[in-house]
Amino acid sequence: MGFTLLYLSLIILIPLAGVFFKAFDQSWTDLWNIIVSPRAMASYRLTFGTSLIAAIINAIFGVIIAWVLVRYRFPGKRFIDALVDLPFALPTAVAGIALTSLYAPTGWIGHYFNETSLIGSLFPPDGIRLAYNAVGVTIALTFIGLPFVVRTVQPVLEDLSHEIEEAAASLGANRWQTITRIILPELRPAILTGFALALARAIGEYGSVIFIAGNMPNKTEITPLLIIIQLEQFNYAGAAAIACVMLIISFFLLLTINLIQWRASRFQLSVR
Image (tube, rainbow, N blue to C red; front, side, top):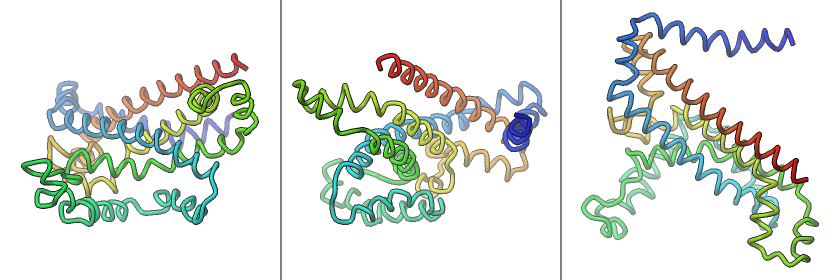
């Protein structure tokens, strides 16, 4: 216990406490003005909004991908299984450049949605922009968060016996009832864990987002970038103040998810 507390203190608690102490080097008025400035509030909305949307998308499609990888056999399965881990190994800056080259208005995919294309002409006057806006940020955050859900749900699916589904079918349950009443309750704790991990990664992501976001103040500027800007301007107290807001909001989001996961696990045990 002593070693654990010492390690956590040196690696996590003391650095986080230092951020709060640095933030309070300034007066309460200056601190409040930095935290609730229009530029900071816009970055909060963009960062936490797109992170939440990306985590929800990953929670849905991550479960589907994990299901396909576990329950089906097809050519190239091992290659696709290994491809899921690519966001873990790929440098975030490289991921951002790659996504921008794909989804920018002149990119391989993005040019099909600009105003001069057939698809873009259906949405006048400017077509659909997949980069340099909130959509591009969501795409980047979905890319880097997908492996967390897949790798969290996959081992649970592998341990889930087929006999449970066969028993449900023999008792007259259709496929939808089997999924909603048998499979999903077993996967719920793993899905919530993967969702929380993807959300936490998305909130603090920087490298893969700055290339595709556009970085326009009050519009497409994420909070981590705003912190970097404050540091480059030698406003260390201001950067620490914004970082404290991110820490507090992230803590309560993850705490809420963990409480939901704990209650789901308790309910699952009580049912058994």
